[in-house]
Image (tube, rainbow, N blue to C red; front, side, top):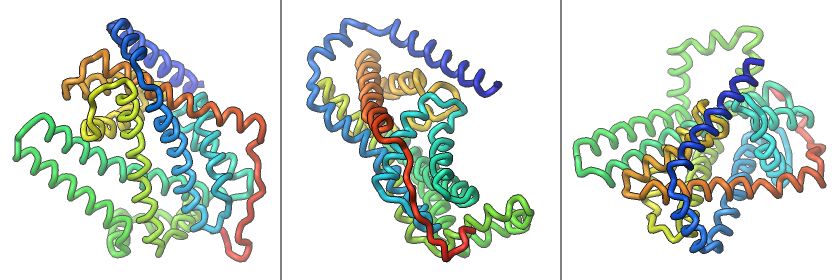
Length: 325
């Protein structure tokens, strides 16, 4: 019950922020921007949003294959696509993950393996996000200031972060020392934890797969940058790709904080503020931000049709010769 109340509060916060933003907006200017829009630019925006779901499914399928859970790419795309739509109305902030887990669990995948795959996906995704945010901050500072000292500090932080993450993912020695330092091996021997630790161990020795997954995570998280860029172009707004890259990774991180419902309001407020630093006026930034989110919602409409005419149920096969744990 508390979680539903939390979701209700988040929805109220989102609607309140969005209402204030729209109230302060010059609606005549927004109307003029929409009237002069080149809607052909929204076609690649729409396709980018759909491609984002396809790439998410492709990445997660790599992890599933590594632990002997077999499923076709089209079915994985269907799960991600439909769960992304359903996740909009599921509270708790982890709706898509819960739905994805439930679908795959119904298909026979083990609980421990799914939890390991989902957590690995989240960890690598967050690692890519952290690196992109650092690069985004670097771009933003470069656009705003000539402070070489600050750039050097940011570059040092970025380099340290990348090396730490890369070492943790791709170096067996690094992982061993990390486990010994935090006594994770001893903790993993507890009866309730051991199945999950053994599932995580399935990824041991698969550094190339994890590196590929990490690289695809960067591509996936660059797609929102392209979405905003295309949306701005559709409204004939002079916005460079570098400007978008300096802002959108930061905005994406802010909108994922558990402050609002699906980032509504918070995302637009962040875009207005950060693009304002780059001399994009309030009304223009809010307009293309709302247009981009509208295209994202429209891109999920085919998922509703797909779910209606083709129920989300498949019969995958697993390697029975291997113990899933």
